[in-house]
Length: 157
Image 1 (tube, rainbow, N blue to C red):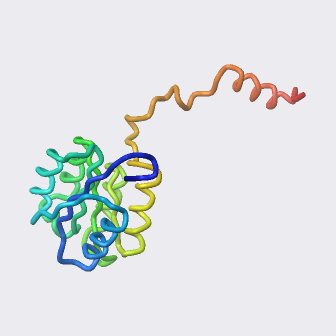
Image 2 (cartoon, rainbow, N blue to C red; image 1 turned 180 degrees about the horizontal axis):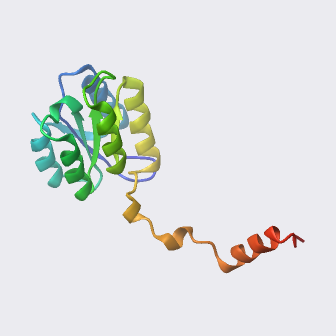
């Protein structure tokens, strides 16, 4: 369970890689329940039945051979998180990184980056989509606007 009270469930696809081995160790350390699937699409199906509302699919970017952007979009539509493990030499990495940012997906290239990402997730919770934000939560009050206008007009007290 994260420091923010959220619980997470992870589905690991690329279990044979070095980064996947690191992920399994981190799951044990942070007490994150997880399961393993043979491909990203069976992981997606399992995620839809997940016991947690904060489900993470961790897969090798190279396993998203058909259309990584479409897969990440499908996950975002279902409010699922994705972490793609790769190397800096992975083909098409720059394009997928742009798409990943739009869909709350992380592109992880090292064990330390994976650990940092998981720690951040446990501390702050799942990142939000732009549609999740209520504009009123970030709108200034009338008093704040008046104070800004007074400051701008040189009328500070």
